[in-house]
Amino acid sequence: MAATEPIRDKRQLRNLANYFLERGQLRNYALIIMGSCTALRISDLLRLKWSDVYDEKRQAFCLHVSLTEKKTGKPKTIALNKQAVAALAIYFPHRRGTFIFASNRKDDRAISRVQAWRIIHAAAIAVNIAGKIGCHSLRKTWGYHAWTSKTVSPVVIMDIYNHSSYEVTRRYLGVAQDDLDQAYLRMELF
Image (cartoon, rainbow, N blue to C red; front, side, top):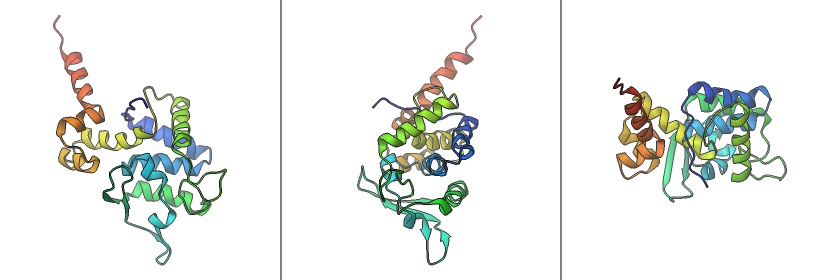
């Protein structure tokens, strides 16, 4: 797979989510919001079940999602922010099966990673987002905006991504290249 890029422009990110919301494609809308707000890998995102995010006893959404990462085998707990909960709440009355991102074709299965890529990639083209945009772009988008907003410590971002160094995180999020680009663009010699 080719390396993907984060969605750097928040307006474009909103356009991507709204592309699905306006068409009544609530599963896909929730996919964009949850992927961007949780920084989960697509393999972990697609495995989420409604029982992971909604407490039937309390009739309320959970404050956190706890899971074991498929790639690393490490436990992870993620706080669900208000945007993630709002997207889930819109989709919840229309849910089908146990998986949040249920397939339209198969009983009680999640969509595949390939299908998720097709959904995200086609919508990115439709709303004119340039660059290499795919499933992993959602994970990177969270980190990119956390980094550039300077409201989240780079150490916390590194921990969320399980990166070993500051440089790995900068390169992963594309901010290393952004910094180089700005150095060239700001320099006016004549």
